Length: 369
Ligand SMILES: NC(=O)c1ccc[n+]([C@@H]2O[C@H](COP(=O)([O-])OP(=O)(O)OC[C@H]3O[C@@H](n4cnc5c(N)ncnc54)[C@H](O)[C@@H]3O)[C@@H](O)[C@H]2O)c1
Ligand SMILES: CC(C)[C@H](C(=O)O)[C@@H](O)C(=O)O
Ligand SMILES: [Mg+2]
Image 1 (cartoon, protein in one colour):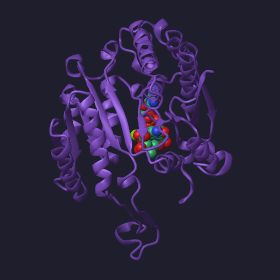
Image 2 (tube, rainbow, N blue to C red):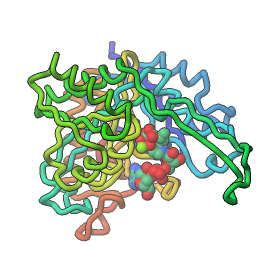
Image 3 (cartoon, protein in one colour):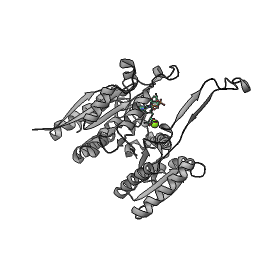
Image 4 (cartoon, rainbow, N blue to C red):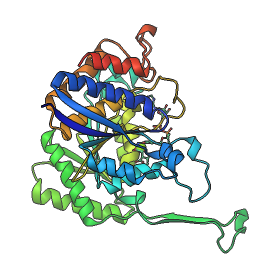
């Protein structure tokens, strides 16, 4: 009897369905080579779910995700759902909702420069040479999940020529949330080069002062073998592009991690190269770090490699299929070594016949597995 894994697939919006097709293609190739069945069932999330049933995270989706062995998500969002009236459902609520419901507090975003893509980055080759870092982003706390409110008709409306609106978001962390993400970062560092940079804004924010104190306490008590440095987030943003190869593990709170990971993606040549794994205590979710790329959606030119590398992370983290994960990685490296590129990772030297669309790029990877 073949082993069967059930994967809940959430294609979402924009380029989501296009890159999801390539993730499935790669899973099928892995299944054929390693004698495993991947049963992939689609469910609705984001804008597609709003259109179908008015809810960005339908109960049936959550149920399917909980019943699966792993969740593979592509991307949500797009301009179609941006300009709705106050309080209307938004695609991003589906994503934040599933992260919270599944308790996915750890988001791993590996930033690696594939040697053949050195020319695709906007940074000089000697700056990005050897870049290999793991961003450990806290994913279920902070500003994203704090109390927020918007007041449309405040007293004093019209003062200073405005309509008198007021709005707030709350940045809150509890000690246990910092402790558990710190442990994840130190554990990751032990398997890597033994260094953690903890990024905060402790010169200004009270949450950051607590963050720093807790990270150091966990470090001193349990991980004294790991080298720990504190970096203020503004300085971290600068150092990420001035000395990126020196970072090993970077741990930070939710919003800083969101912003820094998009910045770090530029080291790899494109946001289309950045995979991620969102982990908690139960079923895990894998998704590219990028969004639904509405500017290129429907044209068949999106880079599917972040989705495919997210499949690699799934095979490793959820199914303990290291050989299969290695095969996916090797296939991606082989494709890049063969000079094949999607439009976002070309450089001045890429010949036209080596520039592939989404479907051909996915096929090229699958064929090499
Ligand atoms: N995890 C997610 O589902 C996720 C993540 C980020 C943004 N979003 C949503 O996506 C929508 C668009 O956001 P945005 O434009 O700010 O960010 P985006 O990540 O969708 O796109 C930013 C830029 O990167 C390019 N890009 C992204 N992925 C690519 C790929 N695979 N191949 C080639 N190019 C790629 C896009 O074309 C665009 O120029 C918004 O609604 C946003 O909320 C969703
Ligand atoms: C779409 C959005 C809510 C999401 C985030 O900010 O977490 C995205 O930018 C990401 O990085 O996964
Ligand atoms: Mg983001």
